[in-house]
Image: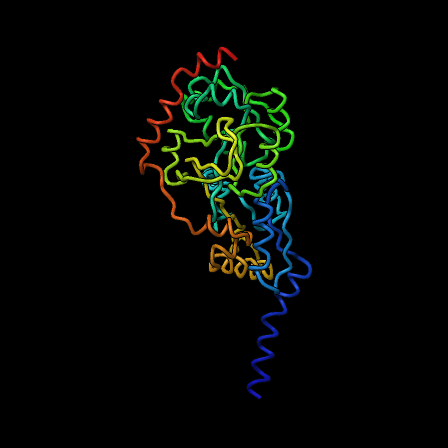
Length: 328
């Protein structure tokens, strides 16, 4: 009799969750198909278990995800961590949404023709000679644009002198850099050796360098400096096997609608979903490729550790960049 009563109680507790899932799927805003956020969104659904009907959504990126979160189209969204932190400075936004977890790391890269990258020498060369260059970004709603603008909007940033052009997506940006329409492109990307974006950059004969910026110190603990490897990348136009470079990295933030802002079945489901994500192992929240698990498990160097040496090296590599750019 006790067993029957227990089962009855359990069914009563589960029915609201199941009925909510049937009519109100948990939707997760990911990112474009050429990035890794859509893959992360897809990997989150199995973590939520069989109780929830879960739908990963392909989107334009971080800023597009914010719009979808605020419109109620999704309950969870992926975003660049530093951008999400800026959103939470708005009391109205912070009253409705929260960062559930920070996972993985995306590296900041600039890519362009080998002769352009050889001329600038480093990211510092780009910064100090911004008036001679143009940069392309893959869409106003992309996380790439959000991170770039956070660097550009630092008071007195030399990047304010940079000509910025927007493109429909990452493939369009790669084509624009290859044609010379812009001098280089800016991306924030998980350094997945098998990623189609990196392959397209290599196939186009373009080079790639890492981004290390002194203004990142103003973002506190959000950005990290890390050595990353991109298979078959061509650093400064030098062909070869996998190359390693130090660059800035920013984690992915998983944002969620706060359960307490909801009512009834929606509140119960959201509370349960948030708890599942908070309690999950990081590797379970990421695509199950060996490279991503290795990235998640690897020790992280925070900004400031060896920074003086890195900045000194970058500054030396950028010396004479204006003269070299003028000859292109």
